Length: 269
Image (cartoon, rainbow, N blue to C red; front, side):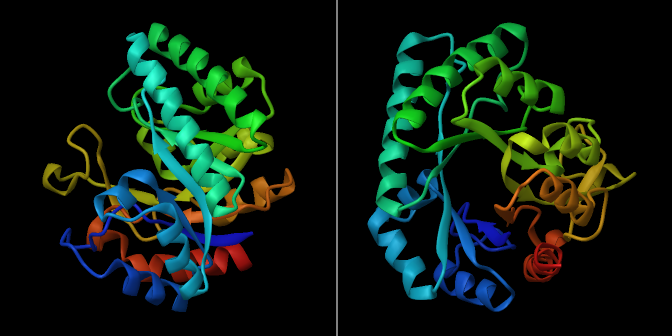
């Protein structure tokens, strides 16, 4: 397994812009090996895929996945066509980066209900076909209000029924969805190709909540409600040997470098 981090923005734990290249260099000192690249972040800093890969090469780091945002569950055919165009662009980026994994998110936070889930499955089937023809794995995660539970995520992948569609497992998001992440790991393990790592602790004070409607706040990896050592063991027993990537949300509460060190011990342990 490898230690990764999600390069989601050019902002630090305090929310202010910072030298994200120097940040990655420091992360490497704490065990970092791979970086999840995202189309939205690269665009925000004016970088192309080739330039981003060179930065990682110079740092001695490797890209793990390339992430794109789509609205595959949209009821608007035009939006769905545009989403498939985004998938195609992402597949081209994967070839350019020399990786075999395209991560897709978007729409889960603003959609819910059976009809949206059915449209999502239909859109995923088309996207998975495109990925399969390019020899690339497409993965989706549990997030938001659509496809956010373990059973919904499994339903999506099994309904599409294509080997090119797999799962990015987010232990923290399962907490927000009211699921036991360890049970979810047991249920989903054979289909997991990537892991997003963050954790939460319960809070009673409304002012401490990370989400207005959820009684949780972020905490460092190794603490809180998600036991990533246990999840690693469950996934490894099913053959997982991919990347576990720290998700740098939660600002100072997540203590980014401490979390990376703990994640490194988990992954390498």
